[in-house]
Image 1 (cartoon, rainbow, N blue to C red):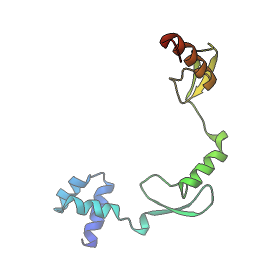
Image 2: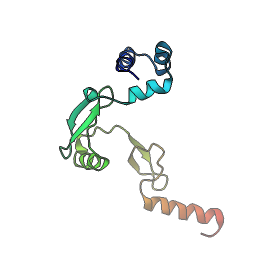
Image 3: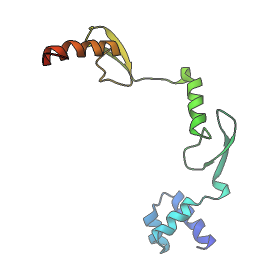
Image 4: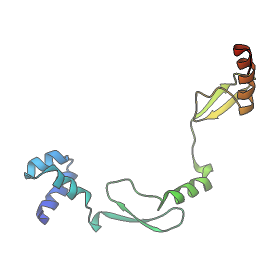
Length: 133
């Protein structure tokens, strides 16, 4: 692939053309277009730093900016900053065993307020249904 072809591929991609359309325009295969788009030059890299440890990381322009250098750093940062997370998935339910109202995060199908209530309910209803536990 010639340098002028690569620049033309990048220009067409920025205009919103897809791989198939670019390949048809330039009379080259789709795999060549895909390869040229995947190989980014140093101009396309954005330099940033990890929000947890400060290590320098590179992000590709046009894609989501990387905030962390690794899953470990991401996990540590989120655990340290739990108060900054705006959680919205709180559900208020009524316990099937003790009939007490409780709040569950992220699970709107939760039935029991605690593991103890689950075991108590299971013991009461399992014994009456099957005769023995």
